[in-house]
Amino acid sequence: LNGFVCHLLHIDLALSVSMEDQLVTSIIALSGSPGDLAQLQNQLKATIPSIIGHTHLAAQVQALQNLNPRHHSLGVVYFLDAQLKSGLQLGDQGFVEYTSRFLQTCSPQQVKLVPELFASVCRRYKDFVIAAGCPRIGVLPLLTALRSLQPSPEHLTPIHSDFLQLCLLSKVYNAAAQLLSEDIYDVDPARTAMTPTDLFLYSYYGGMVCIGRKEYGRALELLLQSLTAPALAGNAIVVAAYKKYVLASLIHAGAVTPLPRLTSSKTRSLVESECRPYNELATAYATHNPDKLRKCIEQQGATYTADTNMGLVKQVAQSLTKRNIQRLTQTYLTLPLADIASNVGLASADTAELYILRMIESGDIHAQINKRDGMVRFLEDPQQYNNAAVAARIDGQVRQCIALASKMQTMHDTVLCDKQYLQKVTSKERSRYEAGEDVVGGSQLFQP
View 1: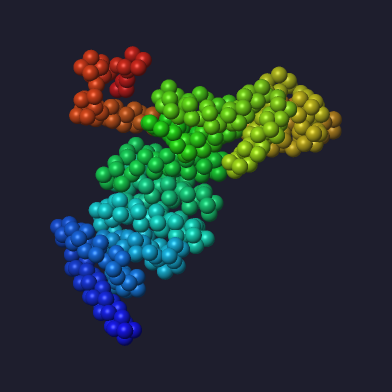
View 2 (view 1 turned 30 degrees about the horizontal axis):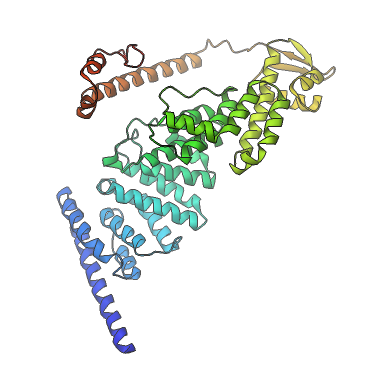
């Protein structure tokens, strides 16, 4: 009986190897012209399901070794997906090494044919490198894969959030600097396999990376995308994004800007009920009283710690001290260090001196410290903003505004011609939109 079972296993293995060998031969033969790729894709769709769960992983690995990741990318994607669905152990080192090489050399033309499958393989790859305890090695492969799937730099893909997650886990925030400096204008699910969750995660992780880089202004823009995205129900990503939004706002601007009118009522009610400790922190901050802020932090410290936000909360407390010092510059020309310390709630004149020196170095204030008598003299900003560098910066920003206005006008015109949009608006509203009026406020929209 044992011999009979072994004989059946050998037959099964031989059949599976034969099936995969035939598929490999087809992949090599049909990975040339676009017409052949379409035929190959249909064949893979029909054949791969019979391989999943019915062949040995060793045979699938051997098949991958016979394929060139650059020239046979379409077939490689299908085989990798088959491996993942055949019970490959999470964190498998062989899968991580092979997929790392593949993602850096794959053909953009071929992976764009199967965006959903390619994005799924990338997401599982991210899970594997995290499980293996080496998220850093996945940063470059996912960035390359992202560029391969992107129709243009203005398109968002599901791989954006996976890449940013690895940057956060490995603390290589600078690796995402170029990507996050690019504005996203297009989300095309048919070409990128995007889902609403991918948009929320991109905005949230992107905001966290910018916070790590101390780029609070850009972080607020990204977090606000999560908060203002259309939503019929709340989700945990929005709650987490709002908490970061409050803390980043206090550090960057000293106040929390109210959410825009376009924010959904579901999101508003969700953050009001789930983020009370953070709203209380903003209220205490608005008093400019360090004692009230300290008391709020002590009362809600357990919540901030559980949310892994205590580090940002401490930065909020430090920013209040700096802003209180800045407020003193608007009232006094000279002031003793001891008086500054007592006014802003610092322990000693030495601590106040340290704060002032750091603020002078960062350009937050302009002042001179007389060490002999412990006096601080506040000065005017020496920058006159009348040089070529300032003019070039203003010119660059004006050009960006012009380009953005042109892009928004194009998008506006596209919406006006969209059949689904036209079916949803009444004839009265349609005439007002065609006239360039804002249905909400009655103001002119997108003037050229």
